[in-house]
Length: 126
Image 1 (cartoon, helix red, strand yellow):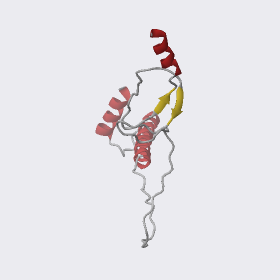
Image 2: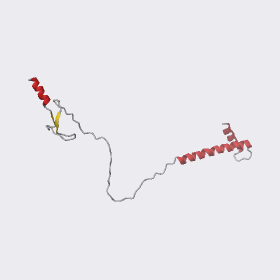
Image 3: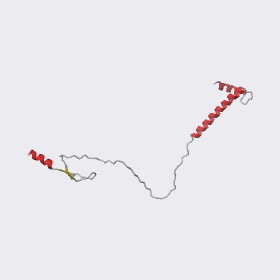
Image 4: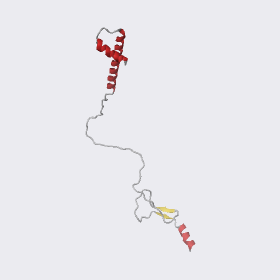
């Protein structure tokens, strides 16, 4: 604060270009001017560093041709709808008439269950 008052007094009373400055006053003025110069240089450098970078676009010459797009992907496919299938009787399958993913309609025969167990239950109940 004292330096600013001293410099302001020196500039107003004696003039900035006056040769009446004492050596100590010249040192203070030189330090003040160097600080201002450092601030200006720093501001200019920050401005130059923060300038927007030039955008480089990738271009190719225009040619006539077909547009093709190949996609290679891996992943898990899921069914649109799922149906739970149940049976009224239990037992071992004797034959299976459909494979996984086959289209079936209502009433189609899907599998034949071994009738031996059901026949034994009927015989025991008689």
